[in-house]
Length: 135
Image 1 (cartoon, rainbow, N blue to C red):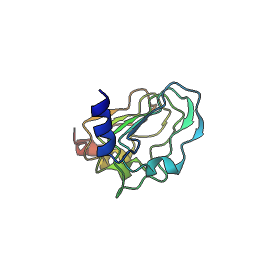
Image 2 (image 1 turned 120 degrees about the vertical axis):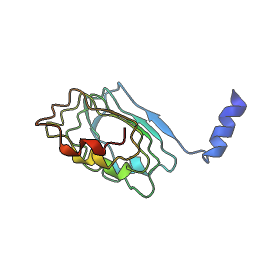
Image 3 (image 1 turned 180 degrees about the horizontal axis):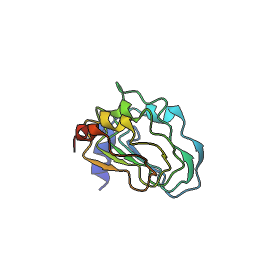
Image 4 (image 1 turned 90 degrees about the horizontal axis):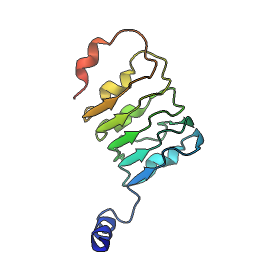
């Protein structure tokens, strides 16, 4: 209801807490300024196959990101995602062409409760550090 929405807005200072941009025609690279939204907890850019999600600008000391949905984007690297290690709980990276061995940055995400990396063209064997995932 309207009163509840107003309370939520008051609680976060009127800041945007989430962006749902899935299944559009977004292209290029996400701007570093995206990660500077002060109360930002949720991002969904899934199904934008020409969008490269970049973690440049993500600051571990100030990020509030808890949920990241980036299924089937044009992303080829998750380097830098570890800067969200204190907050990120859900990461859906499925159907991206990471085309590498299991990304070591993922082991730094100590708050993760759910990680999806299906169909990412990962190569090699699972690393011995797989036990470091906190799930």
